[in-house]
Amino acid sequence: MRDIGVQVKAPKKKCDDIYCPFHGSLSVRGRMLDGVVASSKARNLVVVRRDYTQYNPKYMRSERRHSSIPAHSPPCIDAKTGDKVKIMECKPLSKTVHFVVIWKEEPNP
Image (tube, rainbow, N blue to C red; front, side):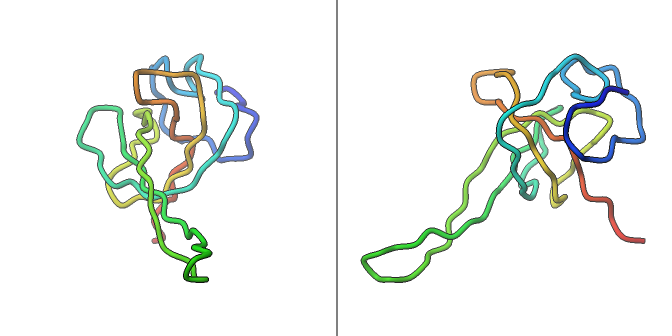
């Protein structure tokens, strides 16, 4: 198990994915974001939805917005639709994927 330099719990399962920051050789850097998994249909890929507010000066109010970020999901983390996850920036893994899932909230018993 590798130390990725971020204070998150390492997954209990082990995997042999080369793009896993804990068991492979992928390094993480840059931005760390929180969100909810909106889609997990593709293999080892999730789409994370981030909700945020943006101030609109014309109407002097805040408006709700969202953004969708594709991220690599290692098999040891196994994020599914509806899970709260933490993603972190890494090197480009494909044309659109520049983030990897580093933490998934465990359900309360």
